[in-house]
Length: 206
Image 1: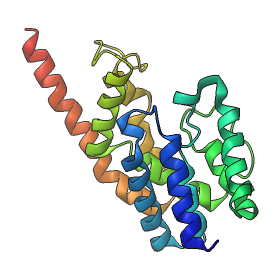
Image 2 (image 1 turned 90 degrees about the horizontal axis):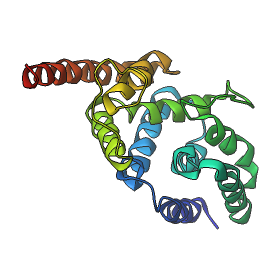
Image 3 (image 1 turned 90 degrees about the vertical axis):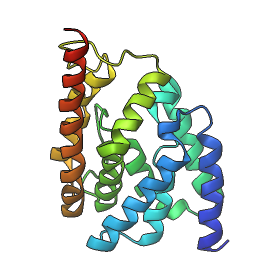
Image 4 (image 1 turned 180 degrees about the horizontal axis):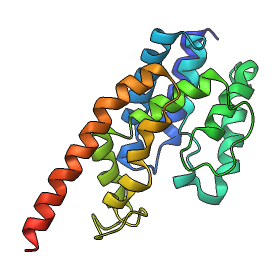
C-alpha cells in the first residue's frame, strides 16, 4: 500500500469513527485541522508531511467528550488500525499526539516536546477560536443542551462560560510562531463577539 492509499484508508477510518459526534467535531473539523496543520508545517518545517497528514486525520478519533470511560478502547482501535495498515512505524508518535492533544488533559505523558504534537495541537486549538470557534462552541452547547449564558458564570456551565474556561486562554497556549500569529485575529474576534453579546443581553433584560 502506497502513501496515497494509506491516506485514503485513514480518511475512511476517521469518517466511520466520527459517527455520533456533533457537527462541530465532524469531518469538516478534521479537514480544517488538516489544512491548518499543513500550513503551520509548510511555514516551519516541523515534521514529515506524511505523518502530519495521518496524525491530523486521526487526532479526534478517540475524543474523551464522546468516548467517556471507553477512551482506552478508542486508543486501542487506532493502534490496531495503524498496525493493520503498515503505519506501525509511526504509531508511538501518532498516539503521543492523540493522547496529549486535548486542552483538558489532566496528566499528559510521553514526549511533550515533540514538534508534531505542537503543530497539530495548535491547528486544533485554532479551530476552537475565531468565528468558527464561536459557531462550534454554540453547536456543542446545543448538542449537550447547555444554557447559552448564566450571568457571572466563568466555569463553563454555559456556552459563554466556556469562553472563559477555555477559548480565551488558547491564544496564550500556542506552541508555534505561526500558530501565535494566526491566533491573534481569531482571539480578537472572540472578544468582539462577547462585547456585542453582552450589549444585546443587557439591553434585553432592562
